[in-house]
Image (tube, rainbow, N blue to C red; front, top):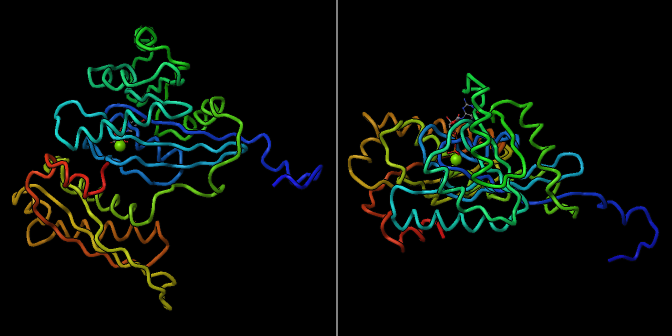
Length: 311
Ligand code: GDP
Ligand code: MG
């Protein structure tokens, strides 16, 4: 290993910073939007509908001498207590104790019981930044001062960052804020890597996003997408050609009808929009087949939850 003596090459990684940052908060506060903005590319699905993020997603961004490794967490579940929810809660609790920094995301000026339940998971030994998001929706900024004082009494936050995840200047500023908390150590990933998730996983995420976007508020969040097939073939015409088959799993026949739509129109649109986005993301020609299946009550069945990939 260290056989280069005084050679300058051995110091190539000196002065580098790297560390894990968990993004936590109740559903819909903007965690996925934030992660995508931080990473500079869409890797976590976003939606107006709460509860669309189920998996722990790692986003990576290397800026200057620092590598930021972000973890997106499922919104902490409070309303129901099914096997699925227990599994989600375990994922959040596991993440927050094991990182260098926590970004506790709330909507600026608000604090609800759901926020309190997430806050209760934070550990005193891990620094946490209070990230007051959606600042653009706060019209009277002076009202934030008393709110902030209350927040500081609730938890010993290391810093307070009022911002909007949709504002690129705020995102840049956030990198500088986070850097201070990351230890000096070699990077874990390549400089250009954005995620450690596979393309197969991302394919499922993108189909899921289109599914929720195009069914609006009607479809319960317990619906999910399973990628059954992901095969890549070289193509003389397109360079890359990827064949994907995925199944939308819903709980009831009525949900199946909702996903398929009149004369199959909605399912067709979900497939077309997902395919177009996947082609851009993968730089490949994509052939996407979608199926819809009814599996009653899977959210209450531990074994089945596991078989869909949740721990
Ligand atoms: P998550 O459930 O915490 O991951 O939240 P999402 O990232 O899916 O965002 C929920 C909704 O809030 C989406 O409609 C976003 O477009 C919106 N949103 C996120 N950040 C901001 C922000 O800074 N300002 C405004 N106005 N909306 C935001
Ligand atoms: Mg999310």
